[in-house]
Length: 216
Image (cartoon, rainbow, N blue to C red):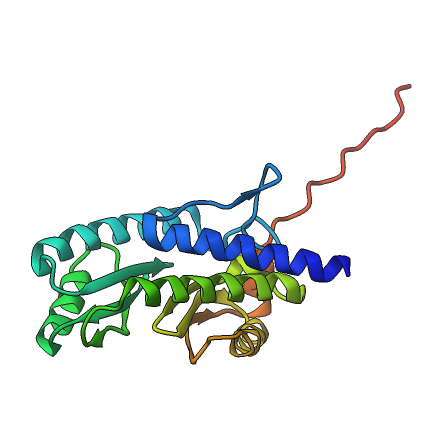
C-alpha cells in the first residue's frame, strides 16, 4: 500500500513539474527540501557539454524567433551537443529553414528533425504531452533498475523522444518502460550508446579511504 501511494505521489509531482516546465520554462522539482532529478543527481555529460547545450538552446531559440517570427511552434532540445527539433511548422520550407538555422549555431554536432508540417497544437495537447512526460519519468524512477536521471524525456503529440548517453541495456529497458506508459503512441530514441566501460567512467568514484595510522 505504501509503495502504491509513493508511486501515485511521484507521478503527480513529476507531472505537475513537467507541465510547469513545458508552459513556463524549465524549473527544478523540489520535494521535501530535496531536488528530484531521478535515481541519482548525476549527469553523464561533461560540464563543458552541459554549458554548450544551454548555449545551443538559447542561441537557437533567438535565431528561430528572428527567422520564423510567430509561424509555428518549435522546441529545441540539446543533449551532448545533439539537437532534437520538435513541434509544428506550417510548410516544408519552414521545416528546412528551422534545421538550417539551428545547424549554423556554434557547437551543434548533429540534428534530429522531428518537426511536423501542420497547424500548431492546442494548449490541451501540450498539457497532455507534459503529463505523459511526467508519467514516463515517474515510471523510470519506479523501475529502480535504470538511472532515470540519465534520460531526457521530450513528448510531442503523444510521441516520446528519449535522449541521453546510455548503454544498450539501459536504452532497451527505458524503451520498454516508456511503451508501457498510458498515452504514449510512439517512442523515438535519440540516444548515444556507450559501453559499460564508458559508463563506469561517468559514475561518481568513491572517495579514497583515509589512513589513520596510530601515532608512535
